[in-house]
Image 1: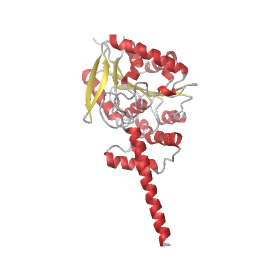
Image 2: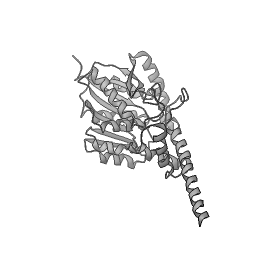
Image 3: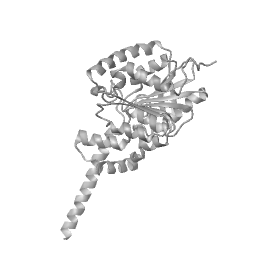
Image 4: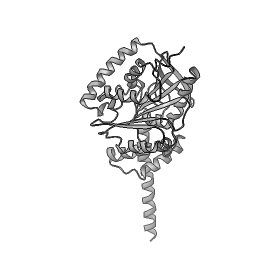
Length: 322
């Protein structure tokens, strides 16, 4: 009997240690920023359809030329003692948009939308989220920590334009960041465009563990999260629940997703949509994959966004500064 008890105890210790090691390694890979200059392409490039890939290259070339000729500046703010960097494009208007890139992406990925918003009369901020691009931080915020940074970017805008009407527009993790932020109901934010957001950080990690590695999430992620909080003095991934924040939001939101999104189950857009008690709309692009709606059919995408925003923000011609 004694040896049975010892054997069970040893087995439990091995399971716990293995769970911590495997889970901690997974989260380290998932949350530690990429090495400088490692990534030279869009964060979701390898998932693009032929049409989306063609448009990606087209828009990339066009926006590189646009960036060289349009007047803009790089600004930086301090958030949680981190230096965050963003492109700023100014217009003679009180309309603003903050564009938020996806997981392991960079601000340059949002320049096609930046050009469109700018030509529509908006002032545009396009930041590198913490742990990405030129912005500081070893760890990626997964939208949850980015909400604090968004409040600081919003303050940056309102300190310069007290009449600013701000739109948050994000893709994937950037959409989650936008929704985490709207759950705090910041002043001057009048609308949100959430393009293929997930419902929780742990949820998407669980799916990745199952799909990519064939590993169970329990107890690996549970142990890893505990270890991550203790060892890294970082945030608790369990708190990074987008749905809870959306339930608290009073900001009109447009939810967008593709019907063939292999990263975010289509049911999650329904969960987020149903959680919001403010004005809301949702649209599903048929046959489109993750974060590809803009690339697959920008004409339709821009019309959908324009129609939604018209209800909550005046056209730039009506709100030009005097």
